[in-house]
Image (cartoon, rainbow, N blue to C red; front, top):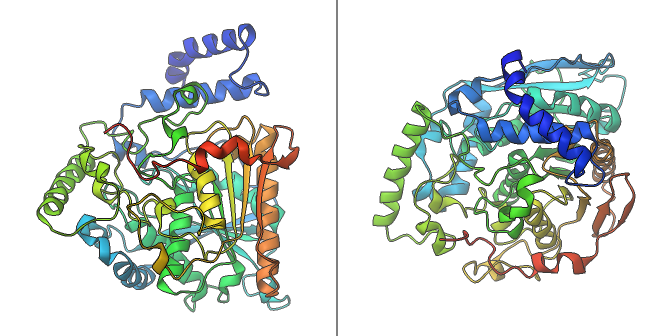
Length: 477
């Protein structure tokens, strides 16, 4: 933070310190450093006045060094993999193409930048060891599908690599509004295909699916789950597991916690998530609005019935950069709304107890673990014909007093607890998958205190979520 920005935030810093010592923090266990960090983060979201292009070009610079035991190798996934992935994605989204902006098929670059994060002594060729014991994580960053980059998560990924013994592949997938849905999904699939069938000069052997884990935070969590759904629905081999941190899986904003006014002063995620940075003059946003209007007119003139609740047609202006409103219920956009979440790899779903996306993470967990019982409202009628009715193994972890992607705030103990538990999940799930010795189907719902105490999550405390009958219905229209 430069000096001018710091000066601008002095009143907020003073008022936050005053509130901390007179009223106490919003959550009992928050210390002053955490409270200040969250207030500053919330203020930055609210006061941002730049364009989406400026935000995308902003690279988060941290005064941090790469740990001595870690090395980072920059890589480039060639356009060939994106072309292969695009053929799959075109087939996948064909039923919804009337609501999809075709510009996603015209990439603005010739491939995908990324990086491997690994132990500095790791040998790509692994001639002496057993390659079958290797494991790798594909990490997809957050940022509302319109911003973010791999730099902001590098410190966390170094820690996960160290604790899990896995290599990490983090990629820079395409961002909206310049490249809306399903461009990001196409790039994520391209990375998966790259690991399974690397080029001759890649310096590593092909990974088997059972050696691969998907990990994502926020929008990257939604994207990771969408990739899992895409692989399942396309009949492609599934990864060993999927780990989701505060996943954004319901772009219809239909769950109660998203609109909970009590969270306005606790979680830093604002209500206006999807197009938060729609400030002008922005060429990218203006072009997106024009394309969205054209698509909406085409939908209105078409006799095709789109999946989703009728409320999506009444919203008006686009509520995010990723897809037009009429496409918000596409299962690869809002994966919690898929006809079934069964038949997926084992999942770890982590959420904070005081974050906006809490309820959709909880409902996602129950829908995946018991797809027969937890179905969508009446507009989704295809479950009985689904090929994927069998339960998915799920571990749900709800952290007390925690907010959106709290893992990024490493100076609070729950962040470190969650990073360790996620690393353990990666190690366990790949070992079970490689040995072809999975345990029977499990569904664990856990509540984890600020100090790391683990206890069962009481289902009575979340009954209002499990009985919610407005899933997929956009509120207040």
